[in-house]
Image 1 (spheres, rainbow, N blue to C red):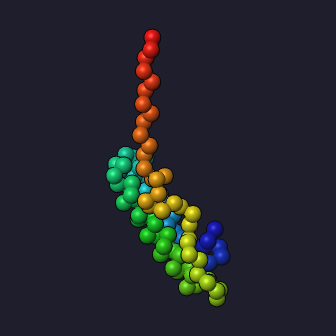
Image 2: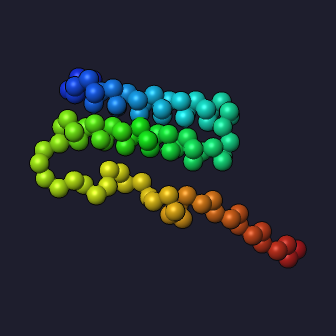
Image 3: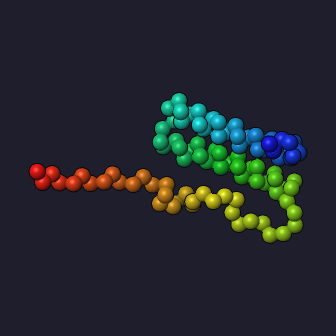
Length: 94
């Protein structure tokens, strides 16, 4: 859809995000990626997203304050990214 309304640079940057998401998805589905690589793969998508934001701001932004955030994803150190410990089994009282 971006290709319909944006110039070449903005559309190219948007397509780069989409391509990286596809590559990440396929790596995960094909099990060529381990859990440890998830952060590396996520960072590749994030890099493309930041590149897109820069291009879009230069080409499309109107005067005014720059948003402090471009996404709602929790900070990398947020506990949401850690795996919870499995529950402790209840003792068998039988």
